[in-house]
Each structure stands twice: as C-alpha cells, then as structure tokens.
Image 1 (cartoon, rainbow, N blue to C red):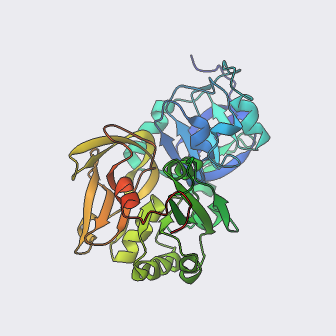
Image 2: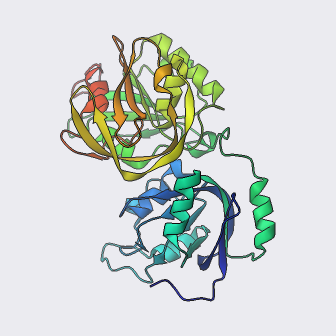
Length: 373
C-alpha cells in the first residue's frame, strides 16, 4: 500500500510531468532522472561515483530492508543527487546493519521521497528517454519548477567524471597472499570499490591516478598495464582525456577500459559515441561473448555507447548486449587493448571472471611472488 497523503514533496520531469510524493529525507536537487532495476544493493548503487548527478528511481518496491554499512559502500559517501522509491522501510531487519537507509540519506543531505506511482514514472522514462528533473521536499510551486527544469541544459556534453575520481594519486594493495602479480596504473574517473577489489583479488596492485594525469606521468610509473575506470557522464567533452588515451595507445602498454573508460578508449581509436534511448542501469544486463559463445549477467550504470559501425579496422566488438545489441566489449587484434561496458567482477554466468577482463590479465607480464618484474 502506498503511503497515505498528504503529499509534501514533488518529482518534476523535463516533459512537464509532476509526481506528488512524501518526504523521507529533505532537500531540493536537480539532476538526470534514471530508473534502476536492481532488486538489492541499493547502498552500492547510491554510493557508486558513476551515479553522480542522477536522481535514481528504484523499481524495487521496498527500499532499506537490510539497512546500511560502511563496508557495503562503493565510495566514501552517496553520490546520487536524489532517491525515489515506492516505500522506504522504517527500520532495517539485519544484525549486520550499522544504521538505516533513511538516516543515512538524511545525514548525507541526499533528498529522498516515497509514495508515488513508480510504474508511471518508469513508463514515462522508458517511453520518452531519461531526462532532467528536480526532486524537492521544500517547494510546492510545480509550475515554476517545470519552467526551471525545462531551462536546464541536457546532460549530454557534461563532464562530471573530472570531479568524481581522486584528486591526488593513491594506492590500492593486492589481496593475494604471495604479493602482487602485477602493478597497474588506474585513471580514476569515478571508480567503484568493487572494481578495485576485482583487480586486487586477482593479484593486481593499483596506483590510482587523477583523471587529468598526463600520459607521460602514467607511463613513467613503469606499470605492467593501464586501466581507464568507469565514471559518470558523457565521454564527448573529455577531449583532453581522449588525447591522453591516444598517447597511451602509442606506447604499446596493455590497456583496459571499463564503462566510461571503454568509451574513451573507443573514441581514441576513432569510433563515435551516442546516447542510448534508454540507459543501462541495473544488475541484470545480459552480455553475449561472441568468442566464448556464452552469456553473462552484468551490473551496469551508463547512458552512452559506441556506434558499432564506427569501430575501426582491427577493433572487434566481441561482446554485445542482448537487449538492444549495443557494444559491451571490444578488443584490438594483435594488441593488448581491451574494453568492457560493465563492472568486472560483478557478473554472473559461466566463467564470469573470464572474457575480456581475463584476456587483459593474461596479456600482462608476471611479476612473481616478490612483486618485482
């Protein structure tokens, strides 16, 4: 049953749609309204830096059942601009929880609402595409909010990734008992901790670099390979990063792109990007590996993809999305260059750790137990 009126909050979309709601956490935030289909993992979703600037509509009807914990977060704080759900659980039922979702969002000043028709919101976004919107518990002037949202520029062309990652270089140690097998440099456009753990658990020691680190500085580290992380937003305005990737490609160093990094790598190779009619936001995106003839169910959070026909000669789209046919992974023939659109280590199916992630790791030179080449 939906929470009873009176409603004291609004979700207003750029197409003029207004959805009355009830406040859970106070505030007013403008952002890109998207819907996420995951059944669980709400804290991971909301703290993923790739969610920056998004007002996230959760299709799972009950949110907050098992609470929150610092160990489940993908970054140091929630990155979502706002949260919309059919109903927030008043109190969590989980002995491992360190607190409730309601209090967590209030503490971090992330506005949240409940009590609206989620199916109606999702139908609107699915039929008309993701769009700008405002979530407010402080204003009731729907007409004025409509006008403000209509005047907002499109999210296409924005570059939130430059603010989503680290500001200075850092380290993430390998999580293997015999020491690191590889030392990798990772360009941080908004990497999630799950991605760092996926590398660390397979023996990689990571050096995290700010997004605008010059190629010469990354190459001077003498890393065994370079990773371009995922992150929020459109790759098109990141011209400086695309040029950096071209320099990295010219060095012959093994490269691996993830999410936004996949797109940057594609643009650097000469491919074109485009905005999907409906973004991929969920933990159930089916990806077909054309080489292994297998399907993996993957976790994704992006709204842009590469035009398949624009991939240059020698660049092969070996993984595709079974829902819409978009490129989910590519490799460059004869070179240690690989890229995927989903989170490595967060996939389910036969040999989920394999695919292009496994091919990249196999292309790296072993350092041995001592951690030295």
